[in-house]
Image (cartoon, rainbow, N blue to C red; front, side, top):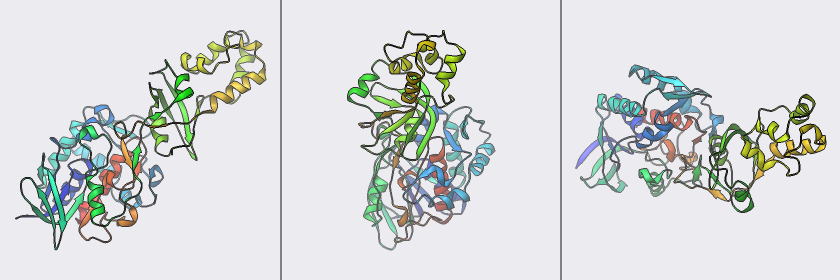
Length: 390
């Protein structure tokens, strides 16, 4: 029977960070994953450049049944801590926008860094391993196709259901439930929204058109890019709002987030002979603007359009309301919303309150960040605090 101090299921962002942290503390660590290579989601993130953290991480930028749960881990392992490791490995990086940090080169540099740190800490990473029965008596026992392994600590770090083409499964959720930990509702997050019927027909032929918008649902609003797709809407603003949207709710889209109120009347006074269609085309992609133009006003000089009609048009552009029919699902989702309930875990260590030695970290927990590096920072931080004590 093989024995070790810590077994970590999952060689992704959270699993590797937890492994190198526990290894630095002198623990013997075995990481198991069914994938062919470590860090597969890291490799495809950020367009291949890995948006590895965000400078503005704070509990208010995460979704959870207990928004304060993530506070302790985020405070103990900060974006600066991860940047320090990146710089020690001489990986060039840049801030793209809104505090989002990317590699100048390739996401492979981040994976190589984590693997190098694991190697230095004596971590044993085993890929293409089939994980069978997992049980606990005095110690945890994990059955694999290479034989059983026993450990004092077991860390669930296999993530959620998003991007199944990379082999994503619900293993961490399933095992957590077997050990008596409760789950919250699980659904796709940071995912394109689908439209149907008249709303989809209205957007026919506009696939690929993009614009900066303000997308809101409930009390949340995100001012970022939107892209029309063949099936609905995508882009950063839509992905962000998808995480708070619920079936049956409307999404409100402001197509003029940067325009001053009453700008059409102002343009009418400044350029009365300008065509209304052209005026809108200065503010929006022309094909998108055309969808909202009244047929009888499109070709008219703006000076001939009554102020009331201009006001109504501006209201329509600022208050476009869509009722999504659903989402693109886990296949296109960047994250899984929900997961192991925070009430089941210690916020300081990510250890189960009821099962000593059992830890759950990263995406498997009911903590989901905004788009823009927040979910990686949660992976690093939750993994660090767990690795400190695992």
